[in-house]
Length: 407
Image (cartoon, rainbow, N blue to C red):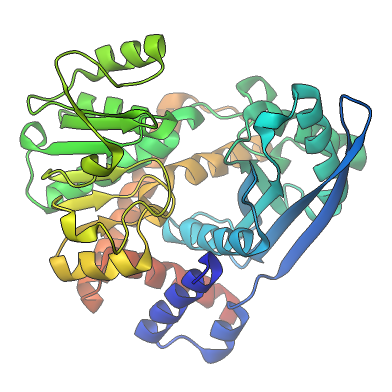
């Protein structure tokens, strides 16, 4: 089953629970528009190479399409369609006025020079500029794309339309109209969800053990924020391996160590563990913050965490999800747990449209209210229908989108 088929299965499940209008259900089975473009790029050696790019605009009932652009060798049309559907669900789950979109280019950016990446980025915008804009579709960074790439894309778009439109793209550098707090917003939203979950489960922070798979941008900030909140981080990992300490890790010292050595492996008097083993630790809260599809039908039987907070996109396969339900393990799904990123992207757009720049304090105050309110709405939906939190998030999101579509 490919990603888009998985997404449609989730749509069907939510639709049955709320007895969704059959016409709305039929419309939601397809993106509203999908662009497939060929992007010729003059390479440094003088040759021309043609890259394939996509942009899926799934649904804009709640507001302009919103979603990242990824540069990856495995990008496919089915993946981009699925991700744009999930972006629609994510925006609707946290009730921000944005629809769902996603883009991608089939490329290994590690094989390109900076100049080639700039020409590719500008070339992509040349092909899709008529279909984006601050009132239509607002791209953002995703896998292997950066604030610099967003700045090139905004510049190219503004050259083509002939006027300034800073809200056309989010995830820009601060100097280009980017938002305070964007760098750690995904983790901050995840930390708010973790705190609310711990409260629901009656867990005391100082006695609550947390394992985090992935110590990249999102995972390292999650560890830092949770440690500051008083939680006991007992294990972390990165692409080279993991470490464990039953006494808890000193996250500040670990961050400095990783900056120096490039990995968490070998830090202090810790026990070495693998990325597979970290998922199977008997902790209160497991945070997959790295890759998709790491909790599968093969290893779900070994999962001993009491609960899971999905900071990564799609870390749990649908088959594993069913088994986690049976085991009574609560999963705070990615469409809620990592929605801090898209929420602050929405704030960036809002600031750009109004010509304002908000402080980090203002950003965090607004973010906390949105994420906490969404968490409790999803929890209440879970209780109302006696379903898991992922299905509850989809139910709440589809209800919101359907309501606008029916009107």
